[in-house]
Length: 460
Image 1 (cartoon, rainbow, N blue to C red):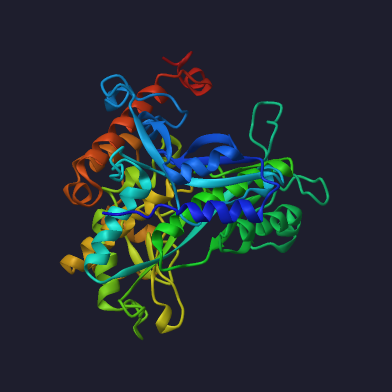
Image 2 (tube, rainbow, N blue to C red):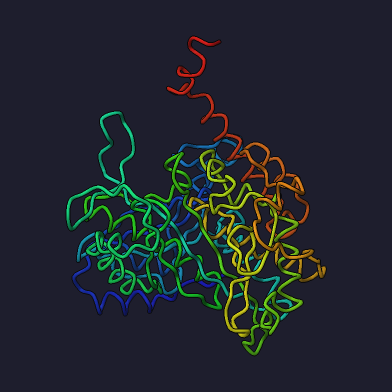
């Protein structure tokens, strides 16, 4: 398995074209999906391209809050040993939201002998892509991320507040799905975000007002380079958060910020090309080709085992409610948003599947790795997805008494036991992911909250 490392000439050309740059933020994506790294002086950059930057291997397996997870064995037992971070090709760009003299570049971690680190999420995804390449196949992916724009300050009772209009100063209250005034309310933010996306090379397309006040969704253009599609999603989330702060707001990709409002989904559109670039999912049949149905069969059978990746946090599971546009069962259908796996309407040559389960809090590399592993498993074994659901997918799931794991603990247990996903992602990665998540579970549930007092202080 080989992952490309950027050439030093890329660095030299960039610095020659951008002499105003004084600082560079270098970052990688940890197992929990949080970007971590350093801010360097510009004179330090070329050395990273020449040899790399040493970082402790334990930072790949810290928890969401950046704390060590000692049970991984990568802290004390490993001596907190360094790994080598190398720059990702094509990701050295200006970072305009940080100032005109700041640049950024993505990193990926390697062992000291140059072997890709098997816990780096980029390498985990590459491991799956190698399986496609061995079969002469190329997956094509596009990511859609939903998120809320919220006030920097909480309300009088500590509550989260949807961001006020940048035009009128009024706070939104209605749903107004697909509302144009709701987009115009944040036009300055969106204008800058699109400009930034162009600067950093992220193919950001149109925006819609989603199914809640101050909730938006922007689509990333599909591409036959799934590793780069995951890079784009990471870069986009980072840019959206940074640009929002410049406009006095926060962009939150938390899966369920409000209990009574829509959650934030991470919808992934997938198809598969042959060596000549032909879409192997294309068909006059609205359900797609046999290969597409086999891919859906694999995704359907492994949905439960992959939930720990698709819904990686305690809050993630608050999103899965019937009649909420978030799926609750391993179902599929055609032009149907009540199922987990949707074949959208469109011309025959564009046939693909939209995977609607993951939350916006998912690690893009790992989400894509699990989806592609599941699809490849289905294609390889010619798995039949069964009949497509027609009509209400929630009612169909209830009638058949099927559902996805509905809590964090059950999902992590299923992931640990998955022989198929271990084969695709690697035993060591699965074990480390499970270790980190169990550490997070223990830390999360040891905190006594106001809800504990409301429920149990007088009633226990």
